[in-house]
Length: 192
Image (tube, rainbow, N blue to C red; front, side, top):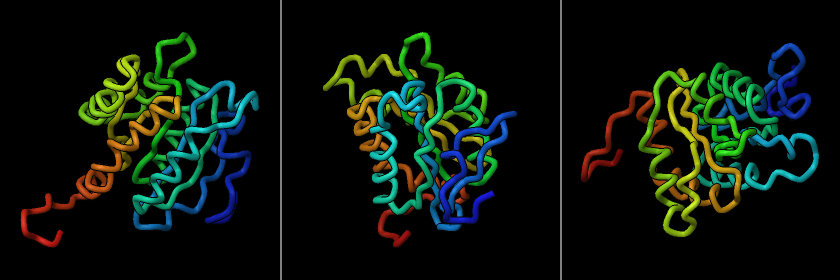
C-alpha cells in the first residue's frame, strides 16, 4: 500500500481479484476528489487520456485536492473504482467516458449499481449545457448521484463534453458537497 500523497500502485487500476489499488493523498484535504477515466482504448495505451486531466485541473481550481485520473476499461472496472473511491471517503468522484450509446459504453450501468440515490438534475443540466452547441449531447446517458457520502458524476468522454460538464459542476459542486455534509443553505445577506 502506498503512503498518503504517493502515486497509486498500478495507476489506481483494480488489481487481480477485484481489489482496488491504493488511493492517493487527496483524502487529507477539506475537499477531496477522485477522477476516473473509463476508456478501453486509453487503458490499453492506444491513446492518451485527455478528459481526465481537464477534470482534475478544473476540480483543483474549485478547491478540491484531486487524485487521478485513474484510467480503467469501461464496465466492471469502473464500478470497482467507484466503490473503492466511495469507501475511501472521497467527497466527489467524476468520471469521463463510456456514457454514449455504443455497445461498449457501460459507465452509466456501472455507476447505477453503486449509487444509493440519483441526482437527475445534475445529469440533465450537463446534457442541456452542450445540447445547443452539439445536438448529439442528448445521446449522453451519464448519471449523477450519491454513493454513501460521495457525489458521483459521469461526464462524456469528449473534451467538449467534459468542458460542458465542468461548466455545470463549477456552479454547484462545492455547494452540493456542503449540503451532503449537512451544511445549511446560504441565506441572502449571510456570510455562509
